[in-house]
Length: 346
Image 1 (cartoon, helix red, strand yellow):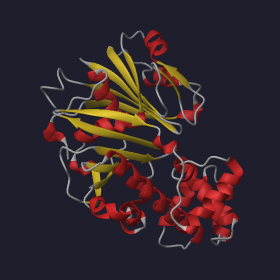
Image 2 (cartoon, rainbow, N blue to C red):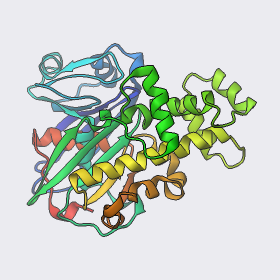
Image 3 (tube, rainbow, N blue to C red):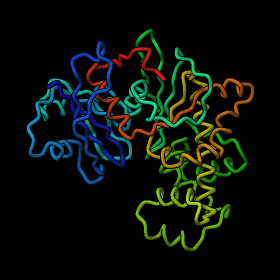
Image 4 (cartoon, rainbow, N blue to C red):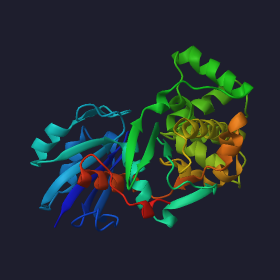
């Protein structure tokens, strides 16, 4: 069998998948078949190789190659994982795994490469817009950090460009956001969009609203946070819970959505993403009602004379949690270029 090991390596979790790729993705354009998948807590391991060993424990698989999508920039086949003390290297992995071919790509490159292969049920549409099938597509993914990438059509192929746009300077749009910038700048100096628009950003927004007295913190919620290891999921859960009011969690999510909408719009303008903007990462699928009804879309559209253009750009949430795995498998098969047919673009 033509088997390929793919991985989505992130600061919080790492997914590994074993894929059957068929014989030729170009002539048989079907999504690679996932034979086996497992998710690991990244921080529990000293590196990627122990995860792979555990993934294949007790099994002898004849794998032809591997492709790993990693959270962080890839330079000359090497990457330091953002928010994780791992360094991964194509050559070292190939030698350790006895493989002729190991490829490292940015995780947003993998998600972008998966977009044309996603089924309708893999997407939740926030703005239908008027899609341009020949237009560029943008991906923005708030998870542990904030990833960005874009896709440009080139005939029947797509060229994918990774980005570190999440580390660009945060630009506030409201008096509250100006106060936020000043609050964070006094602590850290430089403030990026990732600092305010990610899992760790949600924690910063909560701390800002609490410490500046902008929002009330119920006693029950303060006790809940004190007992929990990671406040981000607790803040999100309290914000979307309609049975119990939590002003600080609600206001944190509102501020997050406003900033996310503005930055998604910034990315759409910079790459002229008339083919659509796609929200990836672990956070958007958990807050769909808030994305649909909250300040995300108004912030996305609010681009002055470009407002009419923005209203025509489709906006989708990627629901499939294995999108990066599929993208890595496709990229690994093609070795450096995602080949897709026009009919597969939504």
